[in-house]
Image 1 (cartoon, rainbow, N blue to C red):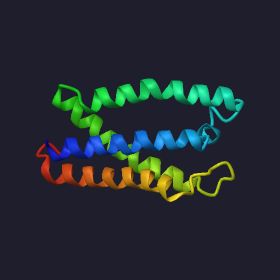
Image 2 (cartoon, rainbow, N blue to C red; image 1 turned 90 degrees about the horizontal axis):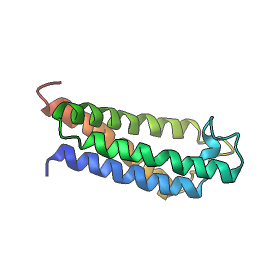
Image 3 (cartoon, one colour; image 1 turned 180 degrees about the vertical axis):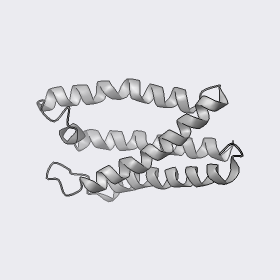
Length: 128
Protein backbone atom coordinates (compact mmCIF):
# COMPACT_ATOMS: atom_id res chain seq x y z
CA UNK A 1 0.00 0.00 0.00
CA UNK A 2 1.24 3.45 -0.87
CA UNK A 3 2.09 5.75 2.02
CA UNK A 4 -0.35 8.41 0.79
CA UNK A 5 -3.19 5.88 0.80
CA UNK A 6 -2.28 4.62 4.27
CA UNK A 7 -2.15 8.17 5.67
CA UNK A 8 -5.50 8.99 4.06
CA UNK A 9 -7.14 5.87 5.45
CA UNK A 10 -5.75 6.55 8.93
CA UNK A 11 -7.04 10.14 8.77
CA UNK A 12 -10.46 8.81 7.74
CA UNK A 13 -10.44 6.27 10.58
CA UNK A 14 -9.55 8.94 13.16
CA UNK A 15 -12.13 11.38 11.84
CA UNK A 16 -14.86 8.73 11.76
CA UNK A 17 -13.98 7.65 15.32
CA UNK A 18 -14.03 11.31 16.35
CA UNK A 19 -17.56 11.60 14.98
CA UNK A 20 -18.59 8.61 17.10
CA UNK A 21 -17.14 10.43 20.10
CA UNK A 22 -18.86 13.62 18.91
CA UNK A 23 -22.21 11.90 19.30
CA UNK A 24 -21.49 11.29 22.99
CA UNK A 25 -20.39 14.93 23.32
CA UNK A 26 -23.50 16.36 21.61
CA UNK A 27 -21.32 18.19 19.10
CA UNK A 28 -24.34 19.52 17.21
CA UNK A 29 -24.66 22.04 20.05
CA UNK A 30 -21.46 23.69 18.77
CA UNK A 31 -22.56 23.92 15.14
CA UNK A 32 -24.20 27.20 14.25
CA UNK A 33 -26.92 25.72 12.07
CA UNK A 34 -27.84 22.87 14.42
CA UNK A 35 -27.40 24.54 17.82
CA UNK A 36 -30.84 26.16 17.62
CA UNK A 37 -32.56 22.76 17.38
CA UNK A 38 -33.62 20.69 20.35
CA UNK A 39 -31.36 17.72 21.16
CA UNK A 40 -33.50 15.13 19.40
CA UNK A 41 -33.62 17.14 16.17
CA UNK A 42 -29.97 18.19 16.44
CA UNK A 43 -28.83 14.60 16.93
CA UNK A 44 -30.97 13.42 13.99
CA UNK A 45 -29.63 16.06 11.61
CA UNK A 46 -26.05 15.62 12.84
CA UNK A 47 -26.14 11.91 11.96
CA UNK A 48 -28.10 12.40 8.73
CA UNK A 49 -25.69 15.03 7.43
CA UNK A 50 -22.69 12.78 8.09
CA UNK A 51 -23.94 10.00 5.79
CA UNK A 52 -23.43 11.95 2.53
CA UNK A 53 -20.32 13.65 3.95
CA UNK A 54 -18.66 10.32 4.77
CA UNK A 55 -19.72 8.86 1.42
CA UNK A 56 -18.21 11.84 -0.40
CA UNK A 57 -14.98 11.64 1.60
CA UNK A 58 -14.54 7.96 0.84
CA UNK A 59 -15.55 8.29 -2.82
CA UNK A 60 -13.38 11.32 -3.54
CA UNK A 61 -10.27 10.31 -1.58
CA UNK A 62 -10.32 6.90 -3.31
CA UNK A 63 -11.52 8.10 -6.72
CA UNK A 64 -10.22 6.18 -9.76
CA UNK A 65 -9.03 9.40 -11.42
CA UNK A 66 -5.64 10.32 -9.98
CA UNK A 67 -6.27 14.08 -10.22
CA UNK A 68 -9.56 13.94 -8.32
CA UNK A 69 -8.00 11.67 -5.72
CA UNK A 70 -4.93 13.91 -5.30
CA UNK A 71 -6.92 17.15 -4.86
CA UNK A 72 -9.44 15.45 -2.55
CA UNK A 73 -6.73 14.02 -0.32
CA UNK A 74 -4.93 17.35 -0.11
CA UNK A 75 -8.20 19.11 0.80
CA UNK A 76 -9.04 16.43 3.35
CA UNK A 77 -5.61 16.72 4.98
CA UNK A 78 -6.02 20.50 5.19
CA UNK A 79 -9.53 20.04 6.62
CA UNK A 80 -8.18 17.78 9.39
CA UNK A 81 -5.79 20.56 10.42
CA UNK A 82 -8.47 23.28 10.30
CA UNK A 83 -10.87 20.97 12.18
CA UNK A 84 -8.37 20.63 15.04
CA UNK A 85 -7.85 24.40 15.13
CA UNK A 86 -11.62 24.93 15.34
CA UNK A 87 -11.88 22.48 18.24
CA UNK A 88 -8.97 24.21 19.96
CA UNK A 89 -10.69 27.57 19.43
CA UNK A 90 -13.94 26.21 20.91
CA UNK A 91 -12.28 24.34 23.79
CA UNK A 92 -13.36 26.93 26.35
CA UNK A 93 -16.92 27.14 25.08
CA UNK A 94 -19.24 25.89 27.84
CA UNK A 95 -21.01 23.68 25.27
CA UNK A 96 -17.77 21.91 24.34
CA UNK A 97 -17.16 18.74 26.32
CA UNK A 98 -14.23 17.45 24.24
CA UNK A 99 -11.85 17.37 27.18
CA UNK A 100 -10.85 13.72 27.46
CA UNK A 101 -7.56 12.27 26.25
CA UNK A 102 -9.55 10.09 23.83
CA UNK A 103 -11.33 13.09 22.28
CA UNK A 104 -8.12 15.07 21.83
CA UNK A 105 -6.17 12.04 20.58
CA UNK A 106 -8.70 11.59 17.78
CA UNK A 107 -8.85 15.28 16.90
CA UNK A 108 -5.13 15.96 17.09
CA UNK A 109 -4.20 12.59 15.61
CA UNK A 110 -6.12 13.42 12.43
CA UNK A 111 -4.45 16.86 12.32
CA UNK A 112 -0.95 15.40 12.76
CA UNK A 113 -1.65 12.93 9.97
CA UNK A 114 -2.93 15.83 7.86
CA UNK A 115 0.36 17.65 8.37
CA UNK A 116 2.28 14.44 7.61
CA UNK A 117 0.24 13.88 4.46
CA UNK A 118 0.83 17.43 3.21
CA UNK A 119 4.56 17.23 4.00
CA UNK A 120 4.87 13.82 2.35
CA UNK A 121 3.00 15.00 -0.73
CA UNK A 122 4.94 18.25 -1.08
CA UNK A 123 8.18 16.30 -0.80
CA UNK A 124 7.32 13.37 -3.08
CA UNK A 125 4.73 14.54 -5.61
CA UNK A 126 6.39 15.96 -8.72
CA UNK A 127 3.12 17.76 -9.62
CA UNK A 128 3.26 19.95 -6.52
